[in-house]
Amino acid sequence: MNPNLSLLSDGKKFMWDGRPYATSEEAATAQEGCQKDGFEVRMVEEGGKFLIYTRRTVKGVAATAP
Image (cartoon, rainbow, N blue to C red):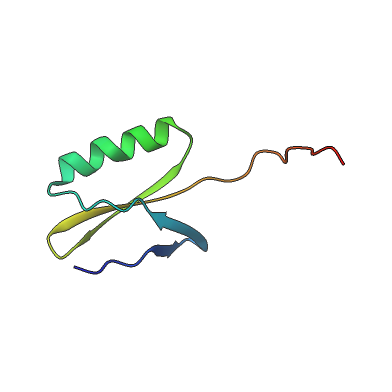
């Protein structure tokens, strides 16, 4: 299995979390955790494994001192 590192969905780019999950239940648990951390999540089945793709939008930009 050689999954894509990124996924385009609804015009948004999502990045793979790097772990293939054996069951949809395992993937759903990971998906819930990511959502609680403020990520948008997509689950994809590929080659009998379940993959989680996430994205988070920037809420604000940190100011830096010169």
